Image 1 (spheres, one colour):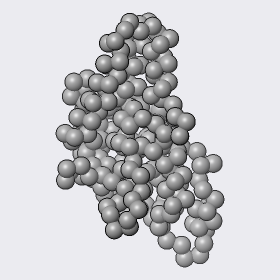
Image 2 (cartoon, rainbow, N blue to C red; image 1 turned 180 degrees about the vertical axis):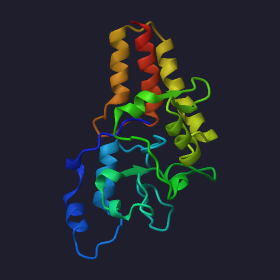
Image 3 (cartoon, one colour; image 1 turned 90 degrees about the vertical axis):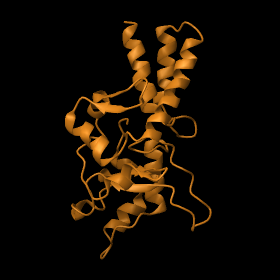
Image 4 (cartoon, helix red, strand yellow; image 1 turned 90 degrees about the horizontal axis):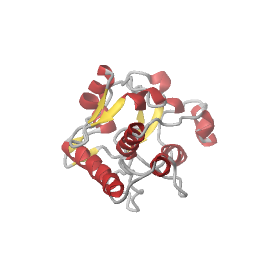
Length: 212
């Protein structure tokens, strides 16, 4: 997980207009979906997978889900609130539910838009496990969002191994590590973040601290 830079100015005008229409009910729109994709760099708010490109065939499986941090079931008054929405991957790997599909109608307290959450997170260097030093957030990541299933942990380790392999090729200066950190932190020219960037940025920051 990384902090999502949630800004009111990212809310599409079409959604602003729609939600004040008499009798409006929540229904995901392409404008809303695209705004959330752009805001998050096309990665899942929870597991950091690359969100798949929409399918051409409408009969094919869904490629993304708009999740409500405070669920629509429990908070009908927040169903149109852009500040309560994130976009997620389909939420199913090898038959195991995770992210929004696992969350269902449960509420989470994870402060996705606050750097405090990212600062609380660490990863198992050899297991790929995601953890938080806040016990409540850690439980939500495990028990509500299912972020430590075997495939997600494996994928995170694969992303980390790519970084490790690169660092082992030469002796890196602090300035060089900082450049690599920025590559994993910043959006690319296409407005995308690297999948599973959370574990890579955590590792690079750790290496930078060791050089101080």
